[in-house]
Every structure is written in C-alpha cells, then in structure tokens.
Length: 317
Image 1: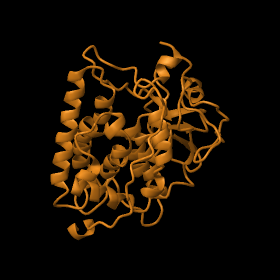
Image 2: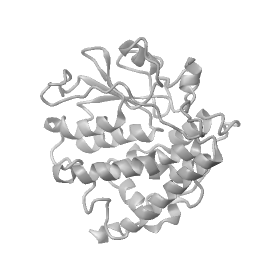
Image 3: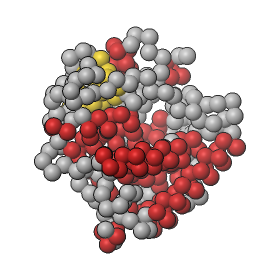
Image 4: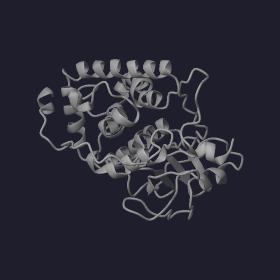
C-alpha cells in the first residue's frame, strides 16, 4: 500500500461497499502511578490535533475543561491534508511543530515504528522522554486525561467520567459511535447504495431517539455534562456544515431537531466548547481533502447558523 493510498481517507471498504474504520494500533496508556511505563507528569506529553477532526476535538475540549493546558502541550496541524498526510505549517489556527520539528505527522509515527503501515491519524500523544508516540487510540486519550491526570486538574474542574455513571457512559458511547460518530462516515464513504442506506437509516433512527431523550433532560445523562456529551457534540457541530451535504446525510438537518439543536447550542455556549470550534478548518478540511467526494474542492460558504442564539435547556435541570 502506497503512502498516497494511506493518506487518502478512507482506504478501508468492505466487498459490500461498507466503510470499515482502521484499527488504532498504538495503544499504550498513561497512568497516574506509572505502572504502564508512562506516568502522568506535567510537561512530558505533547498532544497532536487537528481542529477539523471530531475525534481530536474531543481531546481539545477535555484538556480545556480540566485545565490541563500547561500540563499537556499541544500542536495543531494544517487542516488541508494531501497525499503526504497531515502537515505542520504556519497559518491561521495552526503552526509549525515546536517539539520535534516534524514537517509531517507521519514522521512521529515512523519514529515510533519504522514499519508502521496504518494511516497517520490525529489525535495522538508524543512522549518527550522516550521520543515516541504513546497512543493514537482516541477513546483512551480523553479517559486518561479525566482519570490519570486528576492530580493536575484545575480547582473546580468538572468530573467528566464519574465512577457511578461509567457503565452508562460506555454503553451510550458505544451506541453513538456506531450509529452517529462513525455513522456519518459510514454513510459518506460507502461505495454501494445498500451500505449507504443502511448507515443512513441507522444514523437518523439514532438522531430521532436522541431527540426524544433530550426532551426530558438537559444532557445525555441528566443535569451533568459527561464524556458522552463531548463525544456527541463534536459530530453535531459539524453536521449541517459538512455531513448533511458532503456525506449525503440529508434526511434532516440538526436545526430541524428542536431538542438536539437546543442541546448543541447549550454545549457550544459552555466554556471550553465553542472556543474550540473552528468552522474554517472544519470546512476546508472536509471539502478540500476528499477529492472523490468533491473533485472541485470548492468550499461552501454556508450555512448561516446562530450558535449563540438563546436556548431554554437550563429549565430542564
């Protein structure tokens, strides 16, 4: 498999035309007691992200909410990815790599494993001491920030992964991942009508279910923002701007769901959420990086959405 094939997302499609996301193979964990070999320490780890990527934005939000900006440093890649993969360039909202001087994220992967064969994905965490990536497994990154870096959380930081709610968080996260978070990709990158329609139907059935759930409670598990809200938010904030058109998820827009739209605005207006959203990066990445879906690479100017419009979600608390 050539580097170009690895970089052109996606390359994983079944014989039936269904999108199959690659496995994330760099999966060490950071632990508070250091038992993993990677102890939670301030200044040791560096987070590589894209502001366009929903998986990476999860880590950005959690890092911000927990006050870990001075504990875990961060670099942002150029939102437009070509056949060489994610690049470090100077521009609005992104910059050169100030840790290792990498020009491309692929260099971090190949420094970790010269025989690495997967895609070079964000988010991922670099360890300054061992000069290698610790993990690119995005679900682990936020959980470790929430649990293993607790000694470094800011005073009054929210508990995003409360022990008593963890079974519910994991159960709901699994449903959302398959039907919504990854569901939009399964619809957008399907190469058969059957695979597309299966993903499309599962996506909107789950959005209808969420609309009903959020009619009775402010957040997904009640009155408290948790890890699962962050996981849903990063898909919702991209929905009308990208997934509705670019990924052909066009049965209904987010704004057509009164409860989901109010919920998304509620989160957007919370500290740590809206300021991590960069619609310029989001739209330029998606519309300029997938030539099979958008050969012209024209970036739509819309939609015009008022993310700061008042909502009444607090009344449900």
